[in-house]
Length: 312
Image 1 (cartoon, rainbow, N blue to C red):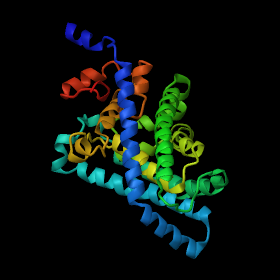
Image 2 (image 1 turned 120 degrees about the vertical axis):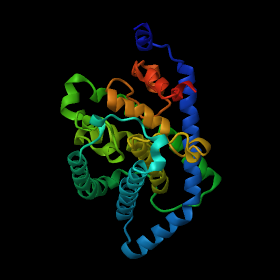
Image 3 (image 1 turned 60 degrees about the horizontal axis):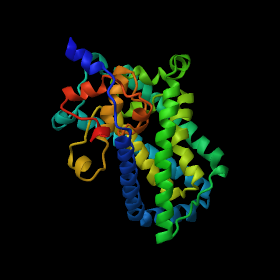
Image 4 (image 1 turned 90 degrees about the vertical axis):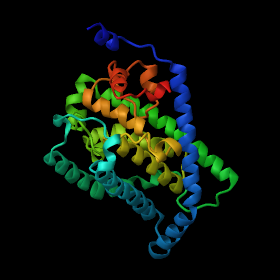
C-alpha cells in the first residue's frame, strides 16, 4: 500500500531539463527538415514546372501539393504502421493494451468514412478558398545560404508555436464544459491507431489540429516547399504518436532521430488514462511547466522499464 501511495505522490520535475529537451528537439527537427528541404529541392522544382506548364495555376498547385502530401501519409504511412504492428517483428515495440482498448471494426470504419469526406471534399475546398491569405512563395527558389537560414528560422518558430498552441487548446478541450461536446469523440479510441489522430469533432480539428499546424507557417511567411516539409514532419509525428507503437529503440529512432517513440508512450497514456499529458511533444515541456503530467505516468513507465523523455 505504501509503495502505491508513494507512486501517486506529486513528483517535482526539473523544468530546466524539460526546456533543454524541448530546445534540443526543436534543433533536431529543424536540422532534419532543412536536410529534407535540400534533398527534395529538385523534385519540388520539377513537379512545380510540370504542373504550371499544364495548368498554369499556383493556387491549384498549392491545393494539390498539400492534399497529395496529406493523403500519401494518411493512407500510406498509416498503412505501413498498421501492417508492421500486426507482424511478429513488432512485438518488442507494441505498447501494452488490454482487450477493451482494441478499437472495434465499426469505429475504424466510421473513422475512415469521416476522413474521406473531410480529406477529399472539405480540405481542398478550404485550401482553395483561403489561398489568398497565404503569404509564402509557391514557386521554387534557389537554396542559398540566406534562403536556408530563413527556412530554418521559420521551421524552428513553427515547431515551438505548434507545441505551445496544441498544449493549450488540447487542455482547453478537456474542460468539463467542452469535453463531452467536442473532444469526447477523439477519446472513443481508448487505445489508438494511426488514423485515430484525425478522428475528431470539426471544432477540434480547426482549434487544436489545423490551427496550431498552420499558424506558424502563416506568421513566418513560409514558402510552399518549406510548408510541405513541415507538414510531413507534423503528420508523421502525429500518426506515429497514435500508432500504438513505441519505435524509440529502433535504428531510425535512436540513431537518426527520425521517429517519435517517446511521443507515442506519452500520448498513448493520455488516451488510456485520460488525465493530464496534454502536450504533443514527448519532451513534455508544457506539461512539466504547468504541472499537468499524469501523476501515474512515471510509475507506468517504470513498470515498462522506461524513463520519461523529459528526464533523460
